[in-house]
Amino acid sequence: FSFFPNKTGVFTYTMKTQIPSITPLRGIAAIIVAIHHFQFRISDFELTQKTWFFYNGFLWIDFFFILSGFVIAHVYLQNFISGTNWKNYKIFIFSRIARIYPLHIFIIFGLVILEFIKMGIVSYGGINITEEPFSGERGIWPLFSSIFLLQNWFFQDLAAWNPVSWSISMEFFLYIIFPFALMRLYKGNLLSLACKAFFLILVIWAQTVIAPPGSSGYYHLRSVKNIAEFFIGILAYRLYAENVWKNLFHKDGFFLLCLSLSVACIHLNFNYSLVIPCFALLVIAGAANDRVSSNILNTEPLNHLGNISYSVYMLHYPIIMLAQKSTKVFFGSNLNTYLSNNLLLTPPAQVFIYLLIVIMAASISYKKIEVPFREGLKKTRFFRNMSLDISSAAHTKGEMK
Image (cartoon, rainbow, N blue to C red):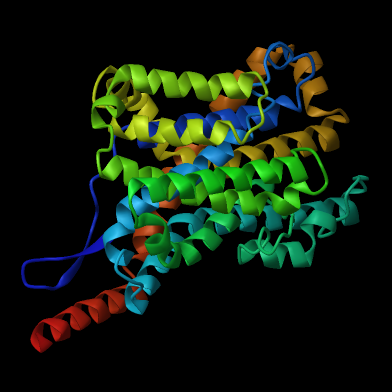
């Protein structure tokens, strides 16, 4: 969504044209992240022994940050390229909150209820559990920081309540700084663009050297990398919007090359700073392609998967945690042992059923929570008043001219 002036000079709130293939790519990335997290609950998962692809599946979260910078630039470029207007800024932030917050707070509310159930089990059920209710990562400070999406700011690392929401916290921070960073990033010639991109990739490489994945410092410094990735997404949009090398970007061969390079870097466990430019090119290739690759990506199942991708991402880890703790409490075994011994499910079958449950839950969540609450927030008096303020400002500006 964005503001654009109509013929009378009044700013109206409209939807910019959706970029083809971007939505399905986001859905595929969300599924890979879900498999990445679930694999650690499965023993003898053969795919992890043959490739680094799923072990390094967390890298597709970095893909999200690049994609986010690209899409936000596409939607809001005209609003902020000439400067940051306070009224436009307010409605931009409110629009982004309406997008990410309803599902986030719904999940937090559900997890709080589960903590009260845990408290009841401890107090009245006589069942011993390893974690005290409302303690550790489920404590009051993590709850506060998670509700206000602060858990990944200022080099913090709080795996608060829904652990994957750390990236939503970082997204929210990036939304806040986006309008102020856009002018400095977007303007300049192609040489300037290349220098900025090189510097940002250098920053990401330095972060991998100082605090590689798995080290104690990685989770405290990854916000630096996320900011750089978001900015790279904005620079990638500049190439796309200006149709630089358009004869190359539109071809299926270029899309397949970018996809292959991305997969190969992850599979071969290269330094992940090498994956980032591949991801940026993949986003451009997916957005620009209008041939066979686009037709495949824009099939109905993949489009649906893209539409529910936010719900897939936000729900997949709570589903793992709920299943894991439930089997531990009620059956006295871990999730993998229960699925393997009691239900006789092979590792591939476990992954398939898990993904099926996640997709079904995400489909319901998208239809019943994401869309209704997002649209409902945009119909509130607060939002309408902001829209009227911007329209009034546009009228006044026209009269002054």
